[in-house]
Image (cartoon, rainbow, N blue to C red):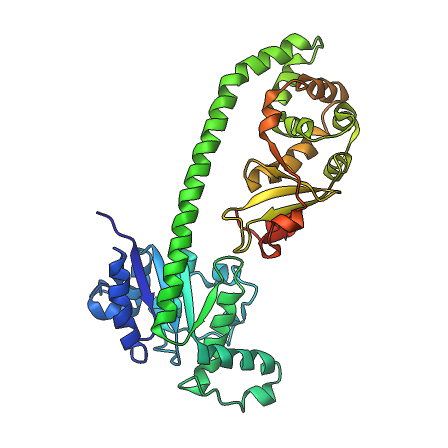
Length: 385
Protein backbone atom coordinates (compact mmCIF):
# COMPACT_ATOMS: atom_id res chain seq x y z
CA UNK A 1 0.00 0.00 0.00
CA UNK A 2 1.35 3.40 -1.01
CA UNK A 3 1.97 5.75 1.91
CA UNK A 4 2.49 9.52 1.87
CA UNK A 5 6.21 10.17 2.32
CA UNK A 6 6.97 13.01 4.76
CA UNK A 7 10.46 14.52 4.52
CA UNK A 8 11.71 16.03 7.80
CA UNK A 9 14.11 18.87 7.02
CA UNK A 10 16.12 20.47 9.84
CA UNK A 11 19.55 20.62 11.36
CA UNK A 12 20.23 17.43 13.31
CA UNK A 13 22.62 18.24 16.14
CA UNK A 14 20.43 20.78 17.94
CA UNK A 15 17.06 19.25 16.98
CA UNK A 16 17.88 15.54 17.24
CA UNK A 17 15.52 14.84 20.14
CA UNK A 18 12.64 16.67 18.51
CA UNK A 19 13.22 14.80 15.25
CA UNK A 20 13.25 11.44 17.04
CA UNK A 21 9.90 12.27 18.67
CA UNK A 22 8.34 13.32 15.36
CA UNK A 23 9.14 9.99 13.73
CA UNK A 24 6.58 7.87 15.68
CA UNK A 25 4.05 10.71 15.42
CA UNK A 26 4.21 10.62 11.61
CA UNK A 27 4.21 6.81 11.54
CA UNK A 28 1.10 6.82 13.73
CA UNK A 29 -0.82 8.41 10.85
CA UNK A 30 0.30 5.65 8.52
CA UNK A 31 2.71 7.98 6.75
CA UNK A 32 6.36 7.21 6.00
CA UNK A 33 8.84 9.59 7.66
CA UNK A 34 11.98 10.29 5.63
CA UNK A 35 14.90 11.21 7.86
CA UNK A 36 18.61 11.19 7.12
CA UNK A 37 19.68 9.70 10.46
CA UNK A 38 17.51 6.61 9.95
CA UNK A 39 18.97 5.65 6.55
CA UNK A 40 15.72 6.62 4.81
CA UNK A 41 17.74 8.46 2.16
CA UNK A 42 19.75 6.72 -0.52
CA UNK A 43 23.28 8.06 -0.30
CA UNK A 44 24.43 7.35 -3.83
CA UNK A 45 28.18 6.55 -3.63
CA UNK A 46 28.65 8.36 -6.94
CA UNK A 47 27.60 11.76 -5.53
CA UNK A 48 27.92 13.95 -2.44
CA UNK A 49 25.54 13.31 0.47
CA UNK A 50 24.12 16.82 0.04
CA UNK A 51 23.11 15.95 -3.51
CA UNK A 52 21.48 12.76 -2.28
CA UNK A 53 19.43 14.68 0.28
CA UNK A 54 18.24 17.22 -2.29
CA UNK A 55 17.35 14.51 -4.80
CA UNK A 56 15.39 12.51 -2.21
CA UNK A 57 13.02 15.44 -1.63
CA UNK A 58 11.58 14.97 -5.11
CA UNK A 59 10.40 11.48 -4.15
CA UNK A 60 8.37 12.78 -1.17
CA UNK A 61 4.82 14.11 -0.89
CA UNK A 62 5.18 16.55 2.01
CA UNK A 63 8.08 18.40 3.63
CA UNK A 64 8.10 19.46 7.28
CA UNK A 65 10.68 22.19 7.96
CA UNK A 66 11.93 22.93 11.47
CA UNK A 67 14.19 25.96 11.90
CA UNK A 68 16.20 26.28 15.11
CA UNK A 69 19.32 28.07 16.32
CA UNK A 70 21.77 26.55 13.85
CA UNK A 71 22.34 27.38 10.19
CA UNK A 72 23.78 23.93 9.55
CA UNK A 73 26.34 22.81 7.06
CA UNK A 74 26.90 25.02 4.03
CA UNK A 75 25.81 23.23 0.87
CA UNK A 76 28.47 22.06 -1.58
CA UNK A 77 28.57 23.38 -5.15
CA UNK A 78 27.28 20.11 -6.60
CA UNK A 79 24.12 20.44 -4.50
CA UNK A 80 23.65 24.07 -5.54
CA UNK A 81 23.65 22.97 -9.17
CA UNK A 82 20.51 20.91 -8.51
CA UNK A 83 18.29 24.02 -8.29
CA UNK A 84 17.12 26.86 -10.52
CA UNK A 85 17.66 29.88 -8.25
CA UNK A 86 16.42 32.42 -10.82
CA UNK A 87 13.05 30.69 -10.96
CA UNK A 88 12.90 30.30 -7.18
CA UNK A 89 13.56 34.01 -6.62
CA UNK A 90 10.39 34.79 -8.60
CA UNK A 91 8.20 32.75 -6.24
CA UNK A 92 8.52 35.23 -3.37
CA UNK A 93 8.24 38.98 -2.86
CA UNK A 94 11.39 38.80 -0.73
CA UNK A 95 14.36 37.66 -2.80
CA UNK A 96 17.32 39.14 -0.87
CA UNK A 97 18.32 35.56 -0.18
CA UNK A 98 19.29 35.14 -3.85
CA UNK A 99 21.10 38.42 -4.47
CA UNK A 100 24.71 38.08 -5.75
CA UNK A 101 27.20 38.35 -2.94
CA UNK A 102 24.47 37.77 -0.37
CA UNK A 103 23.79 34.10 -1.07
CA UNK A 104 24.76 31.37 1.32
CA UNK A 105 22.68 28.23 1.57
CA UNK A 106 22.64 25.35 4.02
CA UNK A 107 21.69 21.84 2.99
CA UNK A 108 18.45 22.23 4.96
CA UNK A 109 17.56 25.30 2.93
CA UNK A 110 18.33 23.50 -0.32
CA UNK A 111 15.98 20.68 0.66
CA UNK A 112 13.18 23.18 1.19
CA UNK A 113 13.94 25.04 -2.04
CA UNK A 114 13.87 21.75 -3.95
CA UNK A 115 10.43 21.04 -2.50
CA UNK A 116 9.25 24.49 -3.61
CA UNK A 117 10.71 23.95 -7.07
CA UNK A 118 8.68 20.74 -7.39
CA UNK A 119 5.43 22.02 -5.90
CA UNK A 120 5.66 19.87 -2.76
CA UNK A 121 3.59 21.21 0.19
CA UNK A 122 5.70 22.61 3.03
CA UNK A 123 4.81 22.95 6.69
CA UNK A 124 7.31 25.37 8.22
CA UNK A 125 8.00 25.75 11.95
CA UNK A 126 10.40 28.22 13.55
CA UNK A 127 11.67 28.15 17.13
CA UNK A 128 9.78 30.97 18.87
CA UNK A 129 13.05 32.50 20.15
CA UNK A 130 14.38 32.60 16.60
CA UNK A 131 11.04 33.97 15.44
CA UNK A 132 11.29 36.79 18.00
CA UNK A 133 14.87 37.64 17.00
CA UNK A 134 13.77 37.66 13.38
CA UNK A 135 11.38 40.51 14.20
CA UNK A 136 14.28 42.41 15.81
CA UNK A 137 16.35 41.81 12.68
CA UNK A 138 13.55 43.13 10.44
CA UNK A 139 13.24 46.31 12.49
CA UNK A 140 16.95 47.09 12.27
CA UNK A 141 18.38 45.56 9.11
CA UNK A 142 18.15 48.78 7.11
CA UNK A 143 20.70 50.37 9.47
CA UNK A 144 23.91 48.42 8.82
CA UNK A 145 25.80 50.16 11.60
CA UNK A 146 23.23 48.91 14.09
CA UNK A 147 22.48 45.45 12.68
CA UNK A 148 26.14 44.43 12.65
CA UNK A 149 26.40 45.12 16.38
CA UNK A 150 23.29 43.24 17.46
CA UNK A 151 23.85 39.83 19.01
CA UNK A 152 20.92 37.50 18.50
CA UNK A 153 20.79 35.15 21.51
CA UNK A 154 18.67 32.56 19.71
CA UNK A 155 21.26 32.03 16.94
CA UNK A 156 24.24 29.82 17.72
CA UNK A 157 26.63 31.66 15.38
CA UNK A 158 25.77 35.31 14.95
CA UNK A 159 27.43 35.50 11.53
CA UNK A 160 24.80 33.09 10.19
CA UNK A 161 21.81 35.05 11.57
CA UNK A 162 21.30 37.03 8.35
CA UNK A 163 21.02 33.88 6.23
CA UNK A 164 18.52 32.29 8.62
CA UNK A 165 16.37 35.41 8.88
CA UNK A 166 16.37 36.13 5.13
CA UNK A 167 15.32 32.54 4.52
CA UNK A 168 12.37 33.10 6.86
CA UNK A 169 11.56 36.26 4.89
CA UNK A 170 11.65 34.35 1.63
CA UNK A 171 9.30 31.66 2.95
CA UNK A 172 6.89 34.13 4.55
CA UNK A 173 6.60 36.32 1.44
CA UNK A 174 5.90 33.55 -1.05
CA UNK A 175 2.74 33.96 -3.12
CA UNK A 176 1.41 30.62 -1.85
CA UNK A 177 2.15 28.02 0.84
CA UNK A 178 3.75 30.81 2.91
CA UNK A 179 2.50 29.87 6.39
CA UNK A 180 5.15 29.84 9.14
CA UNK A 181 4.29 28.71 12.68
CA UNK A 182 6.45 29.49 15.73
CA UNK A 183 6.86 26.68 18.25
CA UNK A 184 8.11 26.39 21.82
CA UNK A 185 7.86 22.65 22.25
CA UNK A 186 7.23 19.48 20.27
CA UNK A 187 3.55 19.49 21.18
CA UNK A 188 3.06 22.74 19.26
CA UNK A 189 4.28 21.08 16.07
CA UNK A 190 2.23 17.94 16.59
CA UNK A 191 -0.95 19.91 17.30
CA UNK A 192 -0.41 22.11 14.25
CA UNK A 193 0.21 19.20 11.89
CA UNK A 194 -2.74 17.26 13.28
CA UNK A 195 -5.08 20.20 12.70
CA UNK A 196 -3.67 21.10 9.28
CA UNK A 197 -3.76 17.56 7.92
CA UNK A 198 -7.32 17.13 9.21
CA UNK A 199 -8.40 20.38 7.52
CA UNK A 200 -6.68 19.35 4.30
CA UNK A 201 -8.37 15.93 4.31
CA UNK A 202 -11.77 17.55 4.85
CA UNK A 203 -11.10 20.03 2.03
CA UNK A 204 -10.09 17.25 -0.36
CA UNK A 205 -13.27 15.32 0.47
CA UNK A 206 -15.39 18.43 -0.08
CA UNK A 207 -13.70 19.30 -3.37
CA UNK A 208 -14.12 15.71 -4.54
CA UNK A 209 -17.84 15.96 -3.81
CA UNK A 210 -18.02 19.30 -5.60
CA UNK A 211 -16.27 17.86 -8.65
CA UNK A 212 -18.88 15.09 -8.77
CA UNK A 213 -21.63 17.71 -8.64
CA UNK A 214 -19.94 19.64 -11.43
CA UNK A 215 -19.72 16.48 -13.52
CA UNK A 216 -23.44 15.90 -13.03
CA UNK A 217 -24.18 19.47 -14.10
CA UNK A 218 -22.04 19.12 -17.21
CA UNK A 219 -23.66 15.80 -18.05
CA UNK A 220 -27.05 17.43 -17.79
CA UNK A 221 -25.82 20.26 -19.94
CA UNK A 222 -24.48 17.86 -22.57
CA UNK A 223 -27.78 16.02 -22.73
CA UNK A 224 -29.60 19.27 -23.39
CA UNK A 225 -27.04 20.72 -25.76
CA UNK A 226 -28.48 19.28 -28.94
CA UNK A 227 -31.99 20.39 -27.96
CA UNK A 228 -30.64 23.84 -27.25
CA UNK A 229 -28.96 24.11 -30.65
CA UNK A 230 -32.15 22.98 -32.37
CA UNK A 231 -34.25 25.46 -30.40
CA UNK A 232 -31.98 28.36 -31.22
CA UNK A 233 -31.79 27.53 -34.90
CA UNK A 234 -35.55 27.02 -35.15
CA UNK A 235 -36.40 30.29 -33.39
CA UNK A 236 -34.18 32.63 -35.42
CA UNK A 237 -34.48 33.31 -39.10
CA UNK A 238 -31.29 35.19 -40.04
CA UNK A 239 -28.39 34.45 -42.34
CA UNK A 240 -26.11 34.15 -39.31
CA UNK A 241 -27.86 31.21 -37.65
CA UNK A 242 -24.69 29.13 -37.51
CA UNK A 243 -22.78 31.89 -35.68
CA UNK A 244 -25.75 32.44 -33.38
CA UNK A 245 -25.95 28.75 -32.51
CA UNK A 246 -22.25 28.63 -31.67
CA UNK A 247 -22.45 31.78 -29.59
CA UNK A 248 -25.55 30.53 -27.77
CA UNK A 249 -23.61 27.51 -26.58
CA UNK A 250 -20.50 29.55 -25.72
CA UNK A 251 -22.33 32.25 -23.72
CA UNK A 252 -25.18 30.20 -22.31
CA UNK A 253 -23.91 30.33 -18.74
CA UNK A 254 -23.47 34.10 -18.47
CA UNK A 255 -26.77 34.85 -20.22
CA UNK A 256 -28.63 32.38 -18.02
CA UNK A 257 -26.99 33.96 -14.97
CA UNK A 258 -28.26 37.40 -15.97
CA UNK A 259 -31.76 36.02 -16.49
CA UNK A 260 -31.52 34.58 -12.94
CA UNK A 261 -30.91 38.05 -11.48
CA UNK A 262 -33.97 40.09 -10.49
CA UNK A 263 -34.16 43.19 -12.68
CA UNK A 264 -36.77 45.22 -14.53
CA UNK A 265 -35.66 44.60 -18.09
CA UNK A 266 -33.31 41.68 -18.74
CA UNK A 267 -33.41 42.15 -22.51
CA UNK A 268 -32.34 45.78 -22.22
CA UNK A 269 -29.41 44.88 -19.96
CA UNK A 270 -28.33 42.01 -22.19
CA UNK A 271 -28.51 44.15 -25.31
CA UNK A 272 -27.22 47.50 -24.03
CA UNK A 273 -25.02 47.07 -20.94
CA UNK A 274 -21.31 47.21 -21.65
CA UNK A 275 -19.60 46.71 -18.30
CA UNK A 276 -20.12 43.84 -15.85
CA UNK A 277 -20.62 46.41 -13.09
CA UNK A 278 -23.64 47.76 -15.03
CA UNK A 279 -25.19 44.28 -15.02
CA UNK A 280 -24.82 43.95 -11.24
CA UNK A 281 -26.07 47.49 -10.66
CA UNK A 282 -29.21 46.76 -12.69
CA UNK A 283 -29.95 43.87 -10.29
CA UNK A 284 -29.37 46.01 -7.19
CA UNK A 285 -26.12 44.21 -6.37
CA UNK A 286 -23.73 46.46 -4.46
CA UNK A 287 -20.98 44.06 -3.35
CA UNK A 288 -19.55 40.69 -4.29
CA UNK A 289 -17.87 38.80 -1.47
CA UNK A 290 -16.07 35.51 -0.98
CA UNK A 291 -17.10 33.78 2.24
CA UNK A 292 -15.38 30.88 3.92
CA UNK A 293 -11.96 32.55 3.82
CA UNK A 294 -11.53 32.30 7.60
CA UNK A 295 -12.49 29.83 10.34
CA UNK A 296 -16.09 30.82 11.09
CA UNK A 297 -19.45 29.42 10.11
CA UNK A 298 -18.62 28.46 6.53
CA UNK A 299 -16.67 25.26 5.93
CA UNK A 300 -16.20 26.04 2.25
CA UNK A 301 -15.67 29.06 0.03
CA UNK A 302 -18.55 30.54 -1.92
CA UNK A 303 -19.41 33.72 -3.82
CA UNK A 304 -22.15 35.92 -2.34
CA UNK A 305 -23.79 38.83 -4.17
CA UNK A 306 -25.10 41.45 -1.74
CA UNK A 307 -28.13 43.62 -2.45
CA UNK A 308 -28.72 47.16 -1.21
CA UNK A 309 -31.02 45.82 1.53
CA UNK A 310 -28.19 43.43 2.61
CA UNK A 311 -30.09 40.35 1.54
CA UNK A 312 -27.77 38.24 -0.58
CA UNK A 313 -27.56 35.56 -3.24
CA UNK A 314 -25.20 32.63 -2.97
CA UNK A 315 -23.77 31.63 -6.35
CA UNK A 316 -24.21 27.87 -6.58
CA UNK A 317 -21.16 27.05 -8.66
CA UNK A 318 -17.45 27.48 -7.90
CA UNK A 319 -15.51 30.71 -7.38
CA UNK A 320 -13.69 30.04 -10.63
CA UNK A 321 -17.07 29.65 -12.32
CA UNK A 322 -18.11 33.12 -11.17
CA UNK A 323 -14.78 34.56 -12.27
CA UNK A 324 -15.41 33.16 -15.76
CA UNK A 325 -18.78 34.93 -15.92
CA UNK A 326 -17.19 38.35 -16.22
CA UNK A 327 -14.70 37.07 -18.81
CA UNK A 328 -17.56 35.60 -20.86
CA UNK A 329 -19.51 38.84 -20.55
CA UNK A 330 -16.59 40.88 -21.87
CA UNK A 331 -16.58 38.66 -24.96
CA UNK A 332 -20.37 38.64 -25.25
CA UNK A 333 -20.65 42.45 -25.50
CA UNK A 334 -18.38 42.39 -28.55
CA UNK A 335 -20.74 40.21 -30.56
CA UNK A 336 -22.63 41.66 -33.52
CA UNK A 337 -25.84 43.37 -32.46
CA UNK A 338 -28.24 40.90 -34.11
CA UNK A 339 -26.36 37.91 -32.65
CA UNK A 340 -26.40 39.43 -29.17
CA UNK A 341 -30.12 40.21 -29.38
CA UNK A 342 -30.99 36.74 -30.63
CA UNK A 343 -29.08 35.00 -27.85
CA UNK A 344 -30.59 37.30 -25.21
CA UNK A 345 -34.12 36.21 -26.17
CA UNK A 346 -33.25 32.53 -26.64
CA UNK A 347 -32.94 31.89 -22.89
CA UNK A 348 -36.15 33.57 -21.67
CA UNK A 349 -37.61 30.25 -20.53
CA UNK A 350 -34.40 28.44 -19.58
CA UNK A 351 -35.14 26.52 -16.38
CA UNK A 352 -31.44 26.26 -15.50
CA UNK A 353 -31.41 29.81 -14.14
CA UNK A 354 -33.21 28.66 -10.98
CA UNK A 355 -30.13 26.57 -10.11
CA UNK A 356 -27.61 29.39 -10.27
CA UNK A 357 -28.54 31.59 -7.31
CA UNK A 358 -29.96 30.94 -3.86
CA UNK A 359 -31.52 33.89 -2.04
CA UNK A 360 -30.94 34.53 1.68
CA UNK A 361 -32.87 37.32 3.37
CA UNK A 362 -29.90 38.20 5.60
CA UNK A 363 -28.78 40.73 6.62
CA UNK A 364 -25.49 39.41 5.35
CA UNK A 365 -23.44 40.79 8.27
CA UNK A 366 -25.68 39.00 10.79
CA UNK A 367 -25.19 35.63 9.15
CA UNK A 368 -21.53 35.58 8.13
CA UNK A 369 -18.59 36.05 10.49
CA UNK A 370 -16.49 39.03 9.38
CA UNK A 371 -13.35 36.84 9.59
CA UNK A 372 -14.84 34.66 6.86
CA UNK A 373 -15.27 37.45 4.31
CA UNK A 374 -13.08 38.89 1.57
CA UNK A 375 -13.87 41.15 -1.37
CA UNK A 376 -14.11 39.03 -4.51
CA UNK A 377 -11.51 41.10 -6.37
CA UNK A 378 -8.89 40.94 -3.63
CA UNK A 379 -9.48 37.23 -3.11
CA UNK A 380 -8.96 36.40 -6.80
CA UNK A 381 -5.94 38.69 -7.03
CA UNK A 382 -4.26 36.95 -4.09
CA UNK A 383 -5.10 33.41 -5.20
CA UNK A 384 -3.26 30.89 -7.35
CA UNK A 385 -5.77 28.75 -9.19
